[in-house]
Amino acid sequence: MPTRPCFILILLALLWTGVLLAGCGGPPTARTTFLNSVDLVHMTDRMAESFAQDETIRANTDADDPWVISIYRVVNHTNQIMPERERWLYIGRLRSLLSQTDLMRDQRIVWVVPPERWPLIVEELGPEYGPTDLSMMRQSPTHLLTAEFNALTQTHARGRSDAYLCAFQLVDLETGRIVWEDAWEVKRAVSGLMFD
Image (cartoon, rainbow, N blue to C red):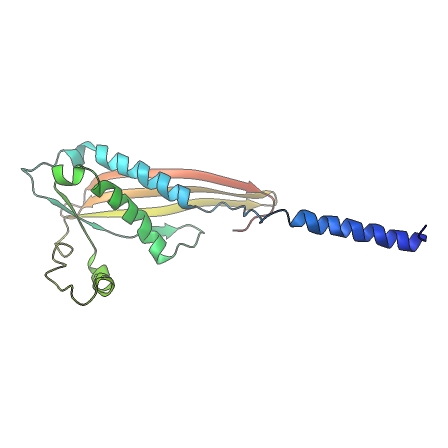
């Protein structure tokens, strides 16, 4: 039978091995209140549905002038860091969803890239695309679509919560009138350790 000090060392070694094995049970789960890809899909689906059903937008017909809508990346006023490409992704997915409907043809809606994005588009498409090829993107906009993220963040010893609000607006550039607006919101909370 091992002596008492040796027995204690063996017991500690077994306990330590158990702790190590328990920690290797799988990858750690990040607990965060930040927005994720599911939120992107849910938000843009909801906003595309709202846009397509708006009475003012649907009232524009073949007899009216087309609406040339310029898009602008999401403005981020939250604690979450959003890279430039991610902020364009929110608006880009919304535009893409709407472009797959009859709304664009029936209501005579044309999407254009804002002027500050033209050099990037030319760079991405290559030198063979000149001003003629990009003429559709260079039409003078009649409307501007914007989106803005805001969040109310609360942190305390027990955890953190974030209430997000993303507000969309379609503005008539001639009159300054808001033609359509809607917002999407979600609240997240975690307790204990976080990775935000």
